[in-house]
Length: 363
Image 1 (cartoon, rainbow, N blue to C red):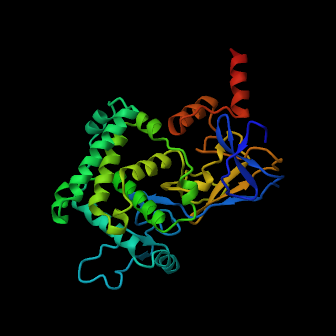
Image 2: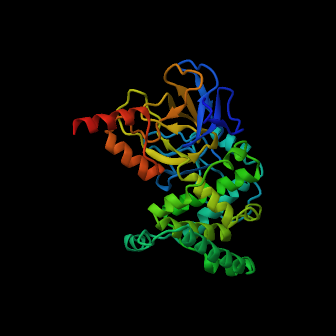
Image 3: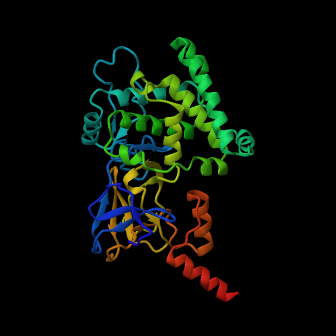
């Protein structure tokens, strides 16, 4: 660590410091770390979601996936539910043990009630993706003023909606597509975890937002985020309604972009098959690891946790880095393009500098 690397005061691990550098925040080893050391095991994600197409195949608790086979256990109707129909909240589990873990994490049934309400209302008005509508939305030139003006209009809509009787609110329920429905579940879980003082919440508040960068590249997201907010306002149970604001949902979306990890099927290290992308989760404490095309940490998933292990001996003061995007076998130009498109930066790790220099010499 040099004089340009200042401690931030963010405490995550005894093995590394989170420091501010001229390029942003980064993690540096406090002392020597041996190859194979488990450097970090995260909490469960403060937000996560399984893609709609995999909802019956991926365990809602541990994310186990067995090559397209349906999960064995469906959520039963909760005690005291009454005579109304229960759809199962869109949740399936790989075992009775995972079902019991879910119940322990949701002892009052609020999250189950939330997911059931989201499912019921989603099925009432399913939106089919229109390429023409998306193309039109993506032509909007995005600036901070455009985003702020959009959310100001949503705030005005919100005041009117909250003054309506619940039955009349239903007339304003937006239709969602599958991706927006998955986003609504991600936000709902984040709100539930904030309400219940998730152990990663303080670190979540330290994350930077990538709102402008992401929406500038994909303007249709602004329309989608607005629909998700309206959907949640009409759908969420009262305890989560009280937390939902346009400011908080912008923070959740803005921090999710660039700070979430893919939930992929787990295969053996020597497997050559493509790992199925099943969903995504946000683990704030792992978000301070920067990318390198020559990383010294390997990330892997164990159930609903992310684990980061040293792939080499690491010296005191050395920066801890991971591979963001499974790009290590790609050529220099592909890595730069994909990182700029998804994480809004051009990589300047030692490998990229070497390869860039080699290209200049070859010309």
